[in-house]
Amino acid sequence: MMNTLQSIRRFLNYRFNLQEDRADEQVITGSIRKNVDFKGANLWALIFAIFVACIGLNVNSTAVIIGAMLISPIMGPVMGIGLGIGINDLDLVKKGLKNLFVASLIGILASTVYFLITPLHDAQSELLARTSPSIWDVFIAFFGGMAGMVAATRKEKSNVIPGVAIATALMPPLCTAGFGIAMGNWFFFLGAIYLYFINSVFIAIAAFVIARYVKLKRHHFEDIATEKKVNRYIIAIVIITVLPSIIMAYRIVDKSIFETNARKFVAEQFNFNNTQVVSKSFAYSTKQKSIEVLLIGAELDKHVLDTLNKKLEHYRLKGVELHVRQGLNAQQHIDLSQIKASILEDVFNQVPKEDTVHTVVLKTLLEDSTVLKEIKILYPQIRSYGLSKVVLQRTDTLKADTQRMALIRFQKRPSESEVKRLQEWLRVRYGQGDIKVITE
Image (cartoon, rainbow, N blue to C red; front, side, top):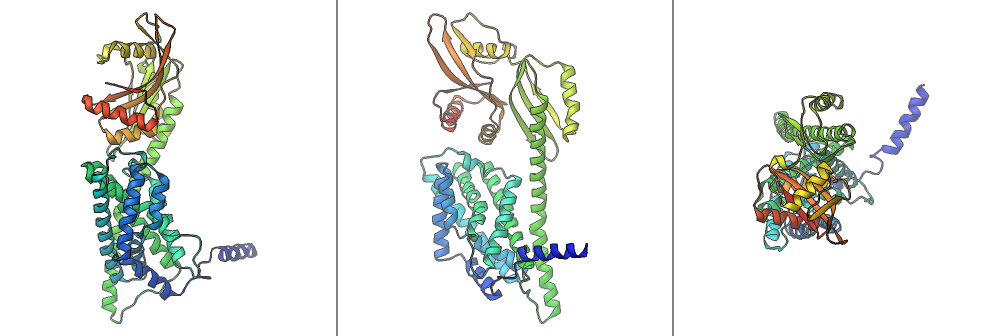
């Protein structure tokens, strides 16, 4: 047994040892310290990278965004903060924080200028993804920071580019914050800054962990009282930095688990022969969580709804409110034209009508969770969304046309200009020019 454990220990030490090809300590700290300062070439490189990233977000090009990450030097101050905490260098921590603030401010200003002058003002999916952090963003930041710091401690630089993984987490949200300011959308700005802060913290923590793991020499002071004071400052900075991020990360994880369980619940429990799920949405807050499901077809009776509520507990959704919206028909006083009403009657009641326009549903309304999430960011007042492809056939001719219909419910009825703008956005988003919006 002991021989087996020793063999496993030798194997792990051989495979995962970071001390073997570690660079000289002065080389490691020197290269990181050099990149902490933001002036001259570093500053110009950041501005150029910001403009490139903004263009990538603006035209929804992942390749262009990656190109911006390759030239971005923004990882310097963050790595400096992590290294400073790891080796007890309070001056390096202060310097890193100061330069990170300067870099962030300049990055936001540059991106704001770009989005003020660009003729393209629509929020594309790449940009929208940076307004609401998820647990995956935290993982990207943390493991990217680990990879960057490991690469920075090697004698021979590997194929890991230290800045790329870090810029992945920092560049897009910084540009998105500028977009929020330029468009006057504080929801975008706060969401992007929130993501930027979390990513910065976890990159610094990753650098700190690697600095301690490879046993870089910590600073000591001749005066023990001064050393204790400095250590207290560093500990205080770490606690002040880490605690909010832990709380934020917990909320992100909790939200991700809730949404995963909610999606599973809807997928498994809302399987009825004569009733279809048009769309589903999940509302998360620290005080209350809720699931809203929009149904078409035969209405579910109270007994079925009570059973669904009881089954929430089996999906770790105890205390979650379930809102089932159903019975979309003329009795709800939907302000639709005769054609729209005919479409809804065929969809919900499946009764053919002898009207001028006969509508036949080609497919069940398809729920697109990604598009719904994007629309909720653009229009928070939206309650539910669904997309359907239908055939419009006249009774006096054999010709038929296909038409895509987007059914959207608002908490407050939107203006005609907002509906038109939303319709144009959906056409660009789906790449279909025939989408027509039906609002309620």
